[in-house]
Amino acid sequence: EVQLVESGGDLVQPGRSLRLSCAASGFMFDDSAMHWVRQAPGKGLEWVAGISWDSHFIAYADSVRGRFTISRDNAKNFLFLEMNSLRAEDTALYYCVKDFGELVVSCYFDSWGQGTLVTVSS
Amino acid sequence: QSALTQPPSASGSPGQSVTISCTGTTTDVGDYDYVSWYQQHPGKAPKLIIYEVNKRPSGVPDRFSGSKSGNTASLTVSGLQAEDEADYYCNSYAGTNNWGLFGGGTKLTVL
Image 1: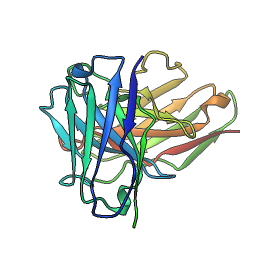
Image 2: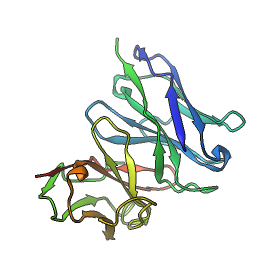
Image 3: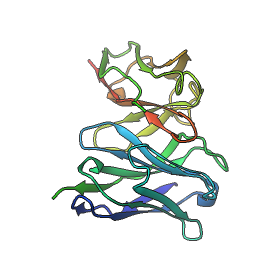
Image 4: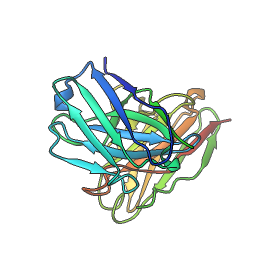
């Protein structure tokens, strides 16, 4: 069974940094692209960033490009999101999401964690 | 890039069919067949129900179907059941710098 467990969410002040982690199990992590998707309270979904299985291909939403960095550790089955220069509008539940494809980036999101809450406020 | 456009709400009675639209542009929905749909119940994580415009992952009932015409994709739920009441989101690939443009979501109510 696919399991994705996020951690690292917290209350932080604007301008500060935060690192999210996602522990993955139950599937071939090093064959799967991964993504971060966020959902502001009471709002819709927003894709944040994605990374291919081998870290060769990485992409970011316009809203976070230059501030956030996605990375992965295939030896330990972990996905990360480094978030810098945080803003109030980054407040959201951040989901770790497995890509549907194997050794391809399908851009379909087929398994989701339960999310970790990031709140940016002074 | 702007989010895809979905109606904020839709409704139908049990047994009826309802269709939810998702309108994009020539740089996302209109340019790629990488359209997917997600179902989200309150307090739960989203679930993939349609990918590649009209394919269903294993375990998703065939009451859910997808289609696309031009810049607009659609999700049809046939034979509505109470458990179909949820929020539905469309998503489209939008190029090498945007792997996942979501719609604003549609709240489906089963009357």
